[in-house]
Length: 523
Image (cartoon, rainbow, N blue to C red):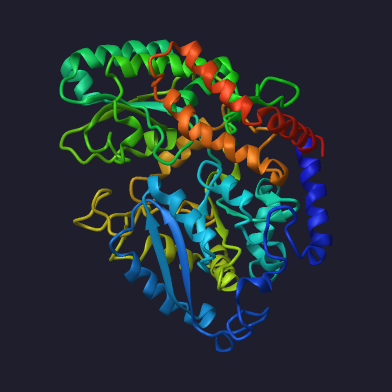
């Protein structure tokens, strides 16, 4: 009930104070929306019609792969909705997951005036927030996307996606948890007699991987999913459920979900971290995981038939894995099925507007259209009926004849930040049954809302120390979580890392972060 009260107070404050908020304090954001480079001739005004608007090109960025028909469909979309938006072109650029952070960091540092980009609590959000890369949105949204803004008020997203009282990211609206499941090649397990009867603990996983390594030839046994765009290792994610520690994924801090207070700990000082390093060292030395784990660029090793097992999400387990090898089948199991685990933040998939955006108002007008017009939403998200999808007898959207999940030219593109619950449809391999099954899974009592959902304080006073912490994690922490201890035993290797972090100002970070966490949870 306390969370709901907090949200109501914040919502009221935002509604009464939004016209007075003209800057995003402590984040380096521009002092007013007019600082984005828009000229009076191109900027949309409240109540504008298409005839009042100069044609513009929206420049957007995201990670993943671009689909073949995307430019064609988006061009037709712009033409169809020219009277409402007068967007001449949507230039949607895609970068691989592994290269995305570097690309966007470079663009922002260079002052590029692209309009919007994908961010998430697991990808880029904290880094970009600390760089002041986001445009504050409350006033602009109330002018150009009022129904979407109200939706965020109603579903509680504002708190999680705001910094210093200003909305800075546009989240999706799906309920989700990233609690891990283990995928394995069911066809190969059956062929070579690998026991799959129990995969509920990390010890079960070790026995399973060891047996598979001995029996299944010509394949990497375990794709640990690290790092390739994510800061957390998959083994650490499994252990979050065992130890019931929060998967905060924020500068590698965590806390006990069962504690009355969110008492933060640096993750390298936890038993959970030590156990993750211990298992990965064992699997690294035994050849169960690849010696090239840190340099691997293939983000679909399991789907491409290169690995016997990997860690993934329940949504994918229910919707199905698309293999690029013949006759492959998968099975899956949920480790620690009763272990407490956090629900994902609304920031798990979101879109942000660049502080230097050339056309922030027009991008918000597009998002408002997608939130209010189902026909526009369907075209933007799914394409054109008969070309990129067909409807089955139940109204679900299916691939056209000659296409499937691996050959689709549009259906299934990386569109998570744009999902709107009121218009979302079963499509492709996402069946209504899969959507219903995941929602039923999420009703389990062990899924909890973290008290620090959306926690992202102004860290300008410790930015040097945080930069050093993140750099040390990149240089040393990732090696440990990949099982590489440079000849040291686990205790010695971890202690060296702990000492390095302490020498780089960890105490200052922890004192500041704990103080901010206490403020955040007692608002």
